[in-house]
Image (cartoon, rainbow over all chains, first blue to last red; front, side):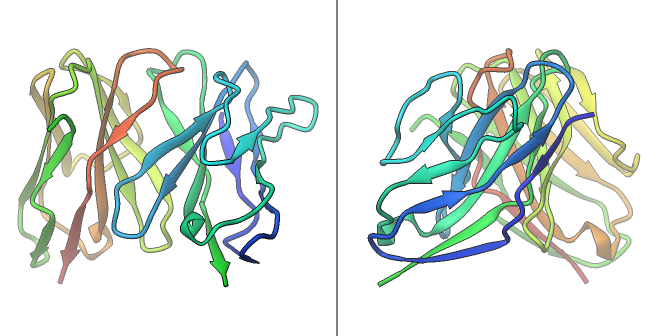
Length: 110
Length: 113
């Protein structure tokens, strides 16, 4: 079974402060990990995926297989980063099934 | 405008009614999905179709019946609506393969009274 845990429902930081959104997963095989973001009144969209090893909008995420984690980080939060962030896992086989975490609402305050 | 579109955006109905939500994608994808987002914003997959064939069915009551007339469309029909069906339903599409990004529709907010 595949499972994704996001322990924080709400994370509030000040503008310019570092951000870390936690994500832990449980999967017996080799997972594909993603971060999706939902800005206010917009559709869910991909932020980044571990396979690409890229930085998007200043965000990075490193897959740590030892700790089964895929935390999302940004060194300096911006007001426009305020959104709902979902960590998601796709297992090999199983038809592209994405298992989402419960989401973390990030609020960046001025 | 290339995207995943859903209709209607809002749906308010009485318990016991039957309703449908339509989804269309013009991205050339071969796989489409339905997700349910509950009041706590928890997102869970319901169904997935690849080339018009059902490949994922996640223990959803059989009052929910997806139908894929072609690769670009995946509709969701719900019979005998219950209060607990109130949620936001998202359609998504992708190329097949676990690495591939899923593109989401804007969602349909269903309210059952």
